[in-house]
Image 1 (spheres, rainbow, N blue to C red):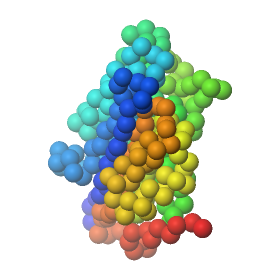
Image 2 (tube, helix red, strand yellow):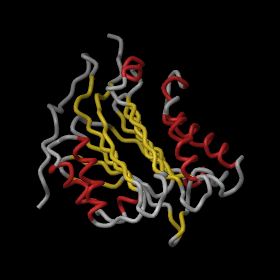
Image 3 (cartoon, rainbow, N blue to C red):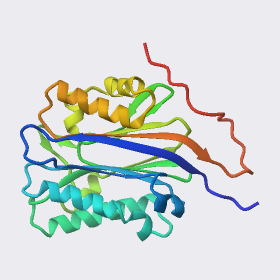
Image 4 (tube, rainbow, N blue to C red):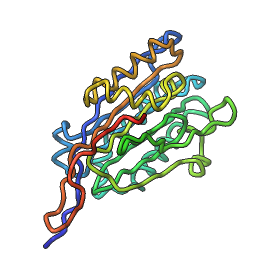
Length: 254
């Protein structure tokens, strides 16, 4: 029997707020999930992104917008995408931003591509991505900081190849992913991010909104974005056997 790669059925939702100190929100995000008809028809998985414009650069918002506009082209551009396709995309944006002048436009980015039974992450900067499985919240991404300064960003130049993080692991039904900018992580710890999922009753939109409401309540001083992704089914080849019987039962840790 011809092998058909497994594809996830995942949905995402996001909430974002502008810092009271900023005139505009320099965070951007993209959700290319099963609710996007063109993405579903291409059958190349689902893609989620959070980008944070670096506020010390003159065109941080532009950098984050450019990053997300390139994410929009991912499925159309790459006929048979691989994780290397994501790294190529990030490198190309880095090159374009450098053309504007060193430090003039920069952003961080966390990309999550779910396809063919795998979760694929490409990450640069200090936005964070967490995975929740069996009730445990694990940080996948590293924090690229040198003291108080940002140690890695898209637009930094050739050294981006040395700091770009690439991560891949098998995907399971019931996996939950949280993509958040540093405006969230500066005031809301990881265990409380997970609380938002339970209090949201399993709704990605309510969970994302709850996280941003908590940032507001605690007086967060930076732009803040939360994107929540729920993997609720995986399409398997009929010839494959699996011992995984369904959605993970989330049990709140004591």
